[in-house]
Image 1: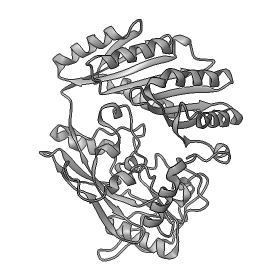
Image 2: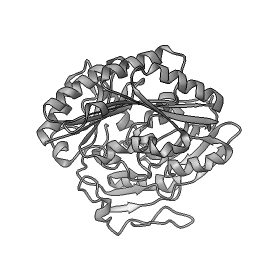
Image 3: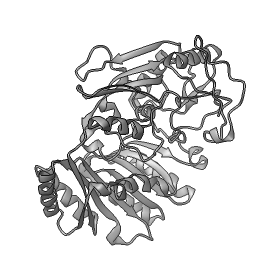
Image 4: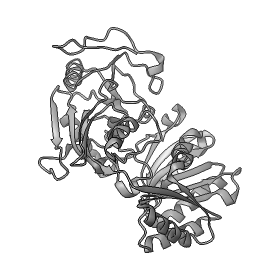
Length: 421
């Protein structure tokens, strides 16, 4: 990898060495890589790219570079590798400012020294702060803590015209100005380059435990979810996992994975009360010291298996209908697997099979507007991306999105057409 380092008084030197095949994005090799070490250097790179109308793709840990449309060409791959510091931790105020290239797991290891953490999860070890914001990617703890967008209270951005701007502040109640952080979250690097961000933190729980409940069918699982919803119990995570395929035993097809955070004494009461609501499910409780034996595999298993990965939303009460849709796909030859936030109504559907099967399932999901919302193809091979737009239609929001793109990125240099705008 090229390391274009700057001197003390200027931006990085012009790129003169091409990137390698290892930096390929959907078969396209960037012409050069830059690794700025400051926000000023990021802004300088973008300003020069705008002047020369050179496309720029921003890369953090690289774990989600396969997401998005295939680029026609990439002039510069801007890596945030050197922007990896925890800039400030105001532990008395429960806030932290972190550079975009910092890995989430390493940041949390530092915050833990003061008994705090940033509750953002990822299936990928290399996931960075900037990548989490750009994709608004979240895991099971979204149930309690929300997405990165919900935790963000301030952001520093480099705009394509070379300006460095800030939005929000360093305190939770700061509401001055337009909230650019909300706009940038989920924009997939198409509007600006994230330099750093400020988040509200939460205390590490005194104790936590995970419960897995396995059901024979979706009806038993939905009844348990309804009972849980009527109760006073408040899990930190409530995930559903369903896999349907010809090689999957029916007694292993449906399960709930619940996490509780509380004091040790209250935790036992929560677990016992939850167990009573699970009906005839096979229940096991696991202490959080064994966290990696459940949550890490749960997050990663879907991505480790082959197939197209589709992100979608649905009404929480429609979970049974979502599983019925999966059963229809299974009958037609697809191997389908769902992992999602049971109460939020959002998750991932992995679809495997031949090309025609994958395309059929994606098309049907998008056609079922009575059931699915925001159907986006995150992971797919070139054969699928040649046939479908991974983002789908933006509908009435398309005009507004295009106007925002023009306002912030007049030359259209950012993300090489890979993003939703």
